[in-house]
Amino acid sequence: TFNNMAARLQTIDNSRGQFMGNIAHELRTPMTTIKGFIDGMLDGTIPPEENRHYLTIVSQETGRLARLVQNMLDITKLEAGEVPVHARSYDLWKTVNDVVFSDEQRIEDGKIDIQGLGGPPLAIYADPDFVHQIVYNIVDNAIKFTPEGGAITFSAQKSKDGKMVEVRIENTGAGIAAEALPFVFERFYKEDRSRGMNTRGSGLGLHICKILVNLSGGQIHAESEAGKWCRFVFTLPVGN
Image 1 (cartoon, one colour):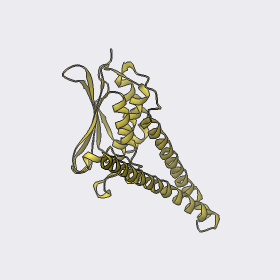
Image 2 (cartoon, helix red, strand yellow):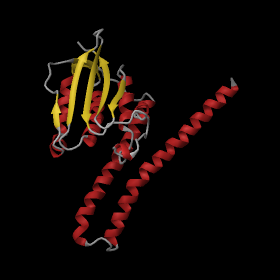
Image 3 (tube, rainbow, N blue to C red):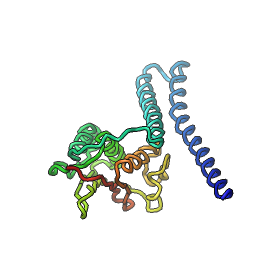
Image 4 (cartoon, one colour):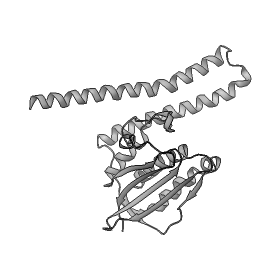
């Protein structure tokens, strides 16, 4: 019993060390970029006529840093059970449509074809804020990895026993390698850049999705055919 306890403590300690190392790396990258560009503008290395261009990059990196910190706070609260669940019955498609419309500019810029919207109302029983975050994170990934002229497809239907709603969000593109699929929901996991995964992301979005889906009483998994498509499938309780 003591040996088992010691082994578990060692595993926790190793995990904590890896976690802190990942945090340090993710924070250091944007901070280094921000400092480098600002120093370049201050010492004249970057010509004044190019300041606006590099200030835009600094703004983007600052936003990335803020999102990373917010994601860390969200994960800490979620894993500690400090986020209350305000579940109610409402139409799933309202959230899906809201997310897609909020990303309309990025979708148009990428010439991405959106398919499957506009289905009949489909009631789920879940926290609307949770579902919005789940759909947003998955759609955000889909937009990043869908090539110009590609497509993102939405579909949803009740399970055979009528107790759950299964939601599918699929995008064309490089997909995810089979050996990477079991790990995409782990904290800070990012597939090798040769596979097309966005190595500039924090690797936290899908981990948050898994926590939120589990808190909602559902499950989530990823499917893919490398070089062709990627699909995220999650379930939520049926609403009234």
